[in-house]
Length: 246
Image 1 (cartoon, rainbow, N blue to C red):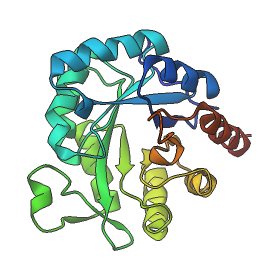
Image 2 (tube, one colour; image 1 turned 90 degrees about the vertical axis):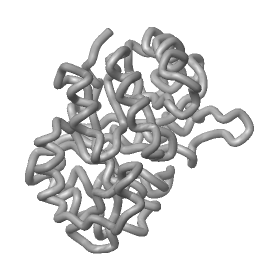
Image 3 (spheres, helix red, strand yellow; image 1 turned 60 degrees about the horizontal axis):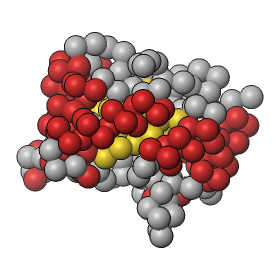
Image 4 (tube, one colour; image 1 turned 45 degrees about the vertical axis):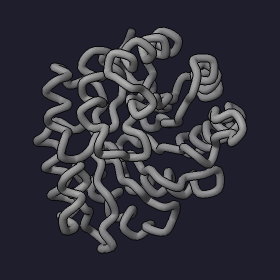
């Protein structure tokens, strides 16, 4: 199984959730492989149970899985790291404060490890206090460029900007895009993305010169009755991706 993410034109890959192996396969097909399917650690009682099940997803998707926290739950940070150490996925979602720990357990630099920071309410700054303990204290405002340098020092591959709440933090997001382009750092916009705002969010990053972007689209494309991500919506998002990278 490969550790290499399949990027569309070496720039874009989609990140969506899945709730079954069959659904995961349908999503990979809908995006012609340019997708990471998220499996949430929070859905499993133990690391062992998660590893056993996630190996099924790995086999079915050629390892195109993203080990998730579960709605950005910082309490899942250690379980995510321990699962990932064993299964060696293509992509990992992690809190800012747990980035170095996770990269160390992996023992390699190829897997994408993102580092979650939050909008701060101030353009050009992010909140890095996203861990299980640090989030209980005052907001830790750090200039976005300094935060990226810290992530690079910890072994992160990309910044996960969450929660964006759709376009409500758009000015802050644009500043993040500019910094990622300046420091040749990957970007993962997350939170409130849907079929309507997806194009402007991704286009803004690409226009800023961000080398690689992995947008996360979650609840807006999940069927509320089945809990499965709709392949037809992934196909729609993929069509937008192709248009933006022509």
